[in-house]
Length: 353
Image 1 (tube, rainbow, N blue to C red):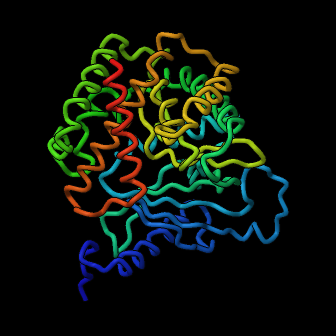
Image 2 (cartoon, helix red, strand yellow; image 1 turned 135 degrees about the vertical axis):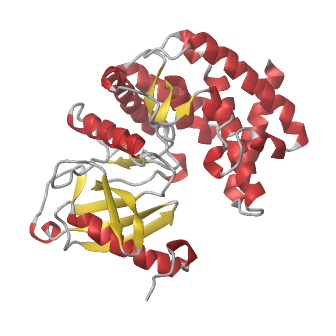
């Protein structure tokens, strides 16, 4: 009997086939008998993996849960194999060479980090990776200044290491770029022609958003992409989403949005969820105080925090209005609230000149 195409299946049917692929992927890591528990499906499909070692090992490891892993099955077409290989190699280097506390990619039995698996139900296959499960929890209510100071120290160490490590990367072309094109014209990732999302902005937002775009382009053209300014960044390291804390220390997760961008853009993403709140300035001061303990940036870069924050919100809002155009009514209330706060920040930034 001929199998129904994967895309024609119900959600439950797709997940059943995905589970078979996940089990096959684990075999490449020597963990074919491990227990699989569905975690979440949002583009990528994630499974919690429990190996037998957790039953026999009482580990004092303060970083990873013994015997617990995260299997990530990547959404096809979202990133190239080269981009995924670079992401995993970077994470592995930060973990093993710099000793940074982050998710550690697990190597296959043959030594590789990324695996491609095809099964009868998904003959075109999927790329997968396996990560050790890191201990920690998201902060409640966005945390306190001491959390941001600790985050700043960690980000500075990541930037310091990466600035040197990336010199050995043969090309930046495999990973996405958070340059002008990447921020303001990158609509292909949601299935629209480049620049199309601008058409769906509310009329009163178009002119100030274009002003931010213009100022950002002038700045990026002037700065260029030297290693002291531009490098491989997490690009979504906010305490509201991708930063866990364990005993007061931060641990970054979910590097899928990573790419090449400005160090200042990375710092802006870390504090952007405080935009429009009374805590914004206080948390930024704490973030950079921690950052400056490990790495300093010239005032020329620091003075552009508001511009990078405005650019970040233009990018984010363009993405949201594009998604809403393709799937009307799909935005959550918290997304709408963040979009409104971001637009207010942009309007005030432009008014200040």
